[in-house]
Length: 141
Image (tube, rainbow, N blue to C red; front, top):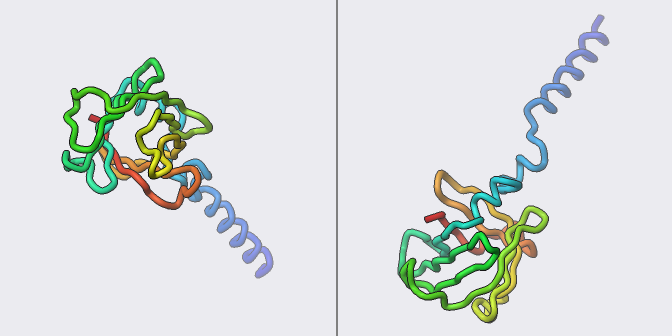
C-alpha cells in the first residue's frame, strides 16, 4: 500500500512539474515571430544605453517597411535627417542591422540582437554574442 502511495505521489509531482514549467521559448522572454516583425516593421524606436525617455541620450531609428533603417545620432529630433542609413532584417528570431559607419567604434555597425520585453512599453536588446547582457534599451514611438 505504501509503495503505491509513494509511486502515485512521485508521478503526481512529475506531472505537476511539467504542467507548470514553461517551454524554452517562454522562459527566454524574447519577442519572436510575427510579434517581433510587427514591433520592427515600419516602426520608429527611441534607443538608449540608459533611458529611452531622456532625449539627450536617445537615438531615434526608423525601421522602414522597405527593409532600410534610418539611424539618427543621440539627441537628434525624430524628424531630423538620417545620420546613417542601412538595412535591417529578422534572422533566427533576432533583429539584425547593418549600417555604413555608425556604431563602428563600438562594433555595433553590424549586429544581431534578441529583443526582450521589460514592461508595458519597454524593451531590451541583447546581442547574440552576449545574450546574458543588455546593451541597449528602447521603446517604440
